[in-house]
Figure 1 (cartoon, one colour):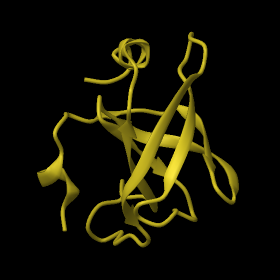
Figure 2 (cartoon, one colour):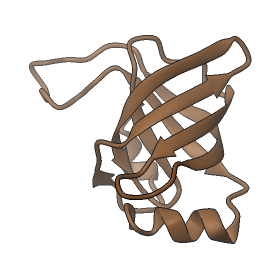
Figure 3 (cartoon, one colour):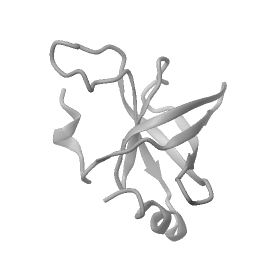
Length: 110
């Protein structure tokens, strides 16, 4: 299923470093793209759909932004014959964003 069809917000390419904290631990990663509603993180070991996470996004020139999220979809394999930009990872939807968090994310998303 193509996730582009279900997106509410335009996604922009990004290379934001992040920490993803979850029940069993933490991982460092980079975002591939970001929007007002969420982001896609490239990681060789994506979490399960429905997993709740705490993100610490390192926005260049800013203090880190701490956001809650939930894994909405996972890409566990790629078809390099289709699109070389595909990466293994997970789509995370932001939840309960404060006004301050929304304002800070406007600098890097649409």
